[in-house]
Image 1: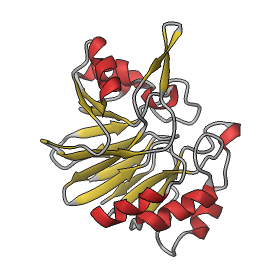
Image 2: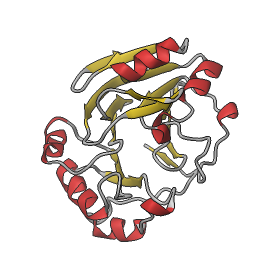
Image 3: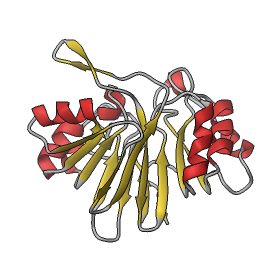
Image 4: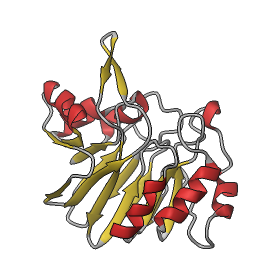
Length: 226
């Protein structure tokens, strides 16, 4: 399994069977992305919640690749209305896909999408648990710190946790340090920071506060092998 960071909260996951997944494909309008939406090759698009900096290029990428969109049911229904194959889920539910198991877990945030002059309700915000090739990945989406994050450590041995640290819209570095302690992941990668001035943070300082050897800063375009 290869994990690639594409800026903000966008994570690409390449599996050994050739399946490629993309979480939160915010590319167009993302000042730190290293991708061009029209060049992305993808099999599955996963979306944590309905904000524009997470749905991003879901529609054009899914259409150009005949990709499957997996998300909370309201986002999946929206994708379906755009002529996209989709699989809707909800909080706590798990499903075994050919490439692995997906579970959507709670996140404390909001979820609305500006579309054709209106703001659409996009269901509950979520984090995503992916289990594939004997590994467990947790993408927290956008969230505040909340004590039930401790339950992840009860049910999962998380290999990599992607946690937002930008503050203002999500938890900041101090809260994310506590979240990392709750989750107990082998590796913790900060996301959702430095895309815009409002969420500028010192990722090195965050990593220094984590349990020794667990924090990893991924530069845009950098990959990690599991």
